[in-house]
Image (cartoon, rainbow, N blue to C red):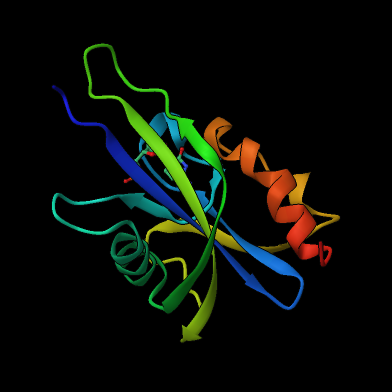
Length: 136
Ligand code: C5P
């Protein structure tokens, strides 16, 4: 059986805002916004991948808090393995996020969450994140 590729995303929350990151690559995703994260490596736990990816992309340490929303099917090339996006809320434990691999970072509130052009797979998580930002 072809294994499913799990992709993890972090909704890093601080003081009523969540961190959004603007992709630099690949070309067809450049300029779109995402929750920072990436592919889980073989043998790696989802939470470890989340911590690793946030360190690589943002230069920070985070702590995953809880899963939010469903597993969302990612668009993949024909014949490529199925891929699912899985999201956690998280908090910063060390450092201030820097756009090491992204074009720009932005802290968004419940009111401004929908002001950026999110990747389609991230859209189903926004209502869950908004309710947490609003104290729900
Ligand atoms: O970041 P990376 O390239 O490893 O992500 C793998 C795939 O998952 C990409 O196709 C990207 O579009 C998708 N992804 C996403 N939303 C995220 C993180 C990744 O759609 N928050």
